[in-house]
Length: 475
Image (cartoon, rainbow, N blue to C red; front, side):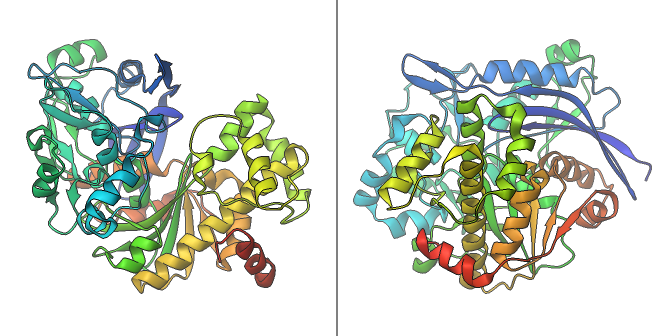
């Protein structure tokens, strides 16, 4: 078939983009149509997403999408909007880093038991999961439909409601065994089961553009919106250029999602205690992974310093800084909210009997070594708990361009790291659309043949990394 173009709407926690991908048998190219900031807004003490602003930016990007075959939408997980009976949004969606869920997870665990929760959703216990958000306050009586963020944007584009499976699996209210909403559990929790819409899978056609959207963007009303791996990590993992199934992956951005790809969930007690999540991937796979705090620690440090433009110089200085001078557990709950991350790192070090890092280069070195240790622990634990051997680690997403982090990850894991593609989520989004339209049966092979990849060989001292891991409980 001749190559076709696809519009990939990709919303990350700190920025969004509309990318135009051209896909053929031996062609996969990306063109950036529009890139924009994603800035949460705090109003009356609550942290919200500016979802209408994001939608406006998406429309701006689609105005440059002439000639595309379809549109796909992905975003971060767990957050949602509620619609009333007329289809109107009931308030701006709340940001998962808002404090409204404080204490809710612990209360629910005490009421129903940790293993019960894990048996249903198979999710890592994170205080911002959708189930805890819904239980943090009564669901408004006017609510008739719950839509995850990418499903909400797809609704505004097409007028069709539904819940794409990969993102639904991040809610804690999706039964990872049956592949459907966990209705009995939803009712047990006192939540209105009727607000959860029908599920759809990547590759399903959601609908065609509403007349007002077509008029505003200049695109035809007949243009379909195709379901993709609407959880951005699901799309990113589809773009992992693996040659076999013996691989680990780190989808590295604001969060690092590190694990392996499986055919079935792992719901053992040991898996639960180890903090692993079982999320649905494109094609019905299971993304068996652990959430590691990711480059959020670095992003917030740069924001505190107002030094976003100085990152290359800081990374060069960090490469020369003393190794293992200070380390933090990147999963510590103190690092979740926005704020002065360097001060929190210093407080963690003081609390654990370490000398806090001195200067920005040492702080960056501390962050990246700690993240590498988080990646190491997640990959090794995923392999041990699932029985899947790992011979190579793929780093995809924005972290793939951080050469120091990639080398440290290779050193920590004692395995080669293949870095790239950087725009893995947008690529995976487009590949899911292309496959639905009959263009590629081997998306990962196409990524290998067409994208720039960099290999990092391990060169570290395994014993030194073992000692460093032991210092922060990640051995």
